[in-house]
Amino acid sequence: VGGRVVRVLPEEAAINKVFDYLVPHDFPGADLVRVGTEVRIELHGRRTGGWIIAADVPSPPGIELRSIAKVRGYGPPAEIVELAMWTAWRWGGRASQVLRFCNPPLAIRHLPSPGTINTSSSESSDSLSRQLRKALTKVDSECRDNQAKVIVIRTPPAIDRTPVILETIAYGGASGALIITPSIGLAENLTRRLRRLGLPVALLPQDWAAAAAGSRVVIGARAAVFAPIQHPGIVMVLDEHDEALQDERTPTWHARDVAIERARRLNVPCVLTSAHPTPEALVDSTVVIALDRLAERAAWPIIDIIDRSKEEPGRHRLLSPRLTNTLRNDERVLCILNRTGRAKLIACASCSEVARCERCDAAVQQPDESAELVCARCDFRRPVVCPKCGGGRMKNLRVGTARAREELEALALRPAGEITANQTDEEIHAAMSCGVIVGTEALLHRVDRASTVIFLDADADLLAPRFRAAEQSMAMFSRAARLLNARTEAPSRLIIQTRQPSHPALAAIALADPARLAEYDLDLRTNIGNGPTLGTASISGFAAPAWIERLSEDPTVQIGGTAATGFLVRAATHDALSEALARVDTNRPPGRVRIEVDPLRI
Ligand SMILES: [Zn+2]
Ligand SMILES: [Zn+2]
Image (cartoon, rainbow, N blue to C red; front, side, top):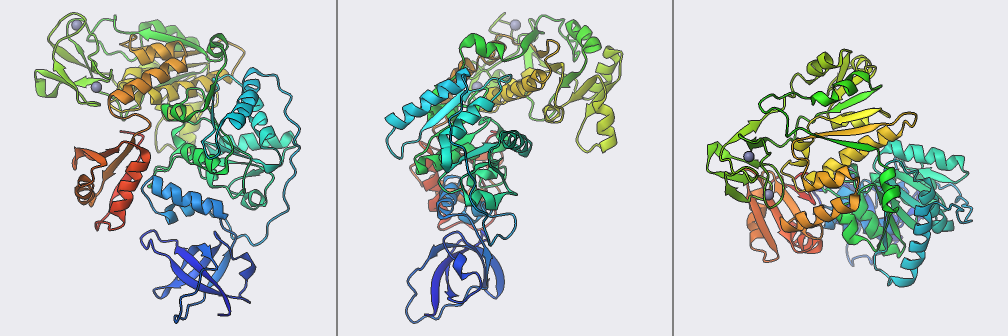
């Protein structure tokens, strides 16, 4: 044969088969042929893209292979092709669905020369970076090869993370460091800061070629976890709790978990930061680093819990009368009121105590005035009796969300703006110039500072019947805390209105104590069958019943839910779940199906 035989995986996920092609010796771009290279091929009479997943495979005797159509250019290195295959398997998808995140944004046929990193260790005496330095030495000496070396750092909102980032880069040395952020904005920001310090930084996706050339600090949002830098000396994920790190499309891979696996395969440490680490990060952690309790508390803003349970029942004002002056006088007040995904709350008709699940603290419902209260999160049932006063009648607690802006404007005695979906730039600009701004939690992503943030109805979020309700509420509060910390001239406040100040998650939040919250969260999720080490997938779509029928024959998984509510599949480990899904996929039932592994919003 006058050339090399390569095995190609086509980019169309539905095909899910590999095909052998010939690359003639004199073919343009033949020098770029290796595992990961992007090529074009003829398949079933038309051209399609694909990746070389094996090079120099033995040519099958007696078959004349077709030549590839084109070498497009550099693709992901072999280690990333393997990581993409693992990612597809782990989240119940197909390799081509992940490999498309590994491609350069434009065809690349030449790489620049590698960067040069000044490897002198950082001189910072900051407490967290000192602890990080020790932890890195510890995991190096104590961990076995191929064991994940995960260091979790609790970074409260007011802390400058630059010292721990520089410490991480110093450890990576000449091999470079890979840093993943939840947003492109944060990646750009960090890139600017590090470049000012003279560090060679490749920002993904645009600097893909520089990242592939190596010896750089490589920074990018979610998909940068597949950056082409070969063998980085360390991997870091900032704000590992941020839901933007998980892809909403299937396969629903999570950049934190891919980062941990990538680092494990390279036998290098993986550093995760968060103001309030998730149970997922904590169960994977080798070491957890935090400031002492006083210093950590000081790096959160003042947190005011406004207890509304004593207020006159039956009147559903949005704002506690105690906050009127705040609304009128503070410089820039953000009022957060989520409108979707809220819990419907009921309370005792005599004492107004919010009715909660005895087992998991979520809001309960009373279907059709029945004699039972039912938990929508864990399905626990109990008689209709108020645990506080023994009352046997419940009432609905309503919070008016429809005319929130008008109501707050009337109270504030000054213009109030509202941020909603589908506004024009002018409308947004006008709303943003108001001293009082109302919006859903999305508002916290649109402004960069505030003097006061009020969560008008924290209960609706905290008691929502989702496994991660407490964690998701904490993520809202910590984002708000960052906005407050962006201004230092005046004391700023995070205000949480609630009717159940004794809820354990809220108690932990009031103390700005992430360790306490994590402990509560881990216990609770383990109790209700959603522990972080379990494999969980929701399955929906036309072919879901057929998938469920096949999975129900599998002794390694358990099935809950219905076609109407969505099916939930569980297994003892992530790997067991992935294996079970892969077994069905090899002889896949026809029709569309959506498989969400590690679903965030159940
Ligand atoms: Zn009562
Ligand atoms: Zn419950």
